[in-house]
Length: 134
Image (tube, rainbow, N blue to C red; front, top):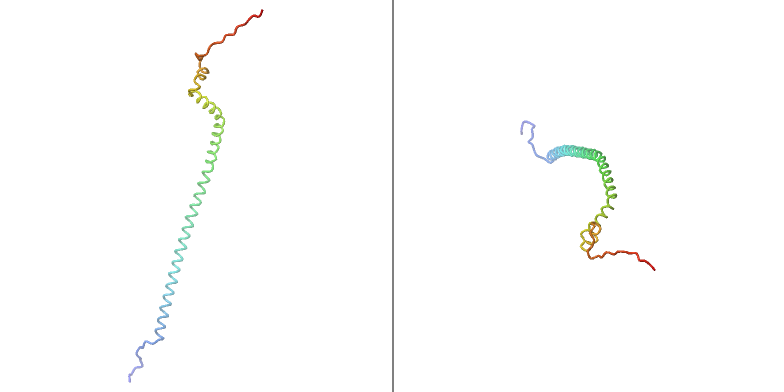
């Protein structure tokens, strides 16, 4: 009979369960810790993205505000040019018609008659004379 009351360590079912429970609890705590870190990083990333998007939006709004007066000036200039075109277009059309007639070979005699003092040589002059009646 042994003299001391120390019993040898026997691995029984209850000690294994305790060790397993403790290791599971540690794993759960580690998983929660990792999840918190992940959520923190994701939230910081989303805040950063929102900040960047807000800065891009503000930049675009200021750019549009600066471009609006320039656009109005350009529209005013376009309207003035369009009015000038409308004033000049009938004259241009008339000149185009005359230009086409000038180089038309069928109308050379008419153009020559209009632009010079020369007369078509095939024409015969007509002289009117007064006749006396008896």
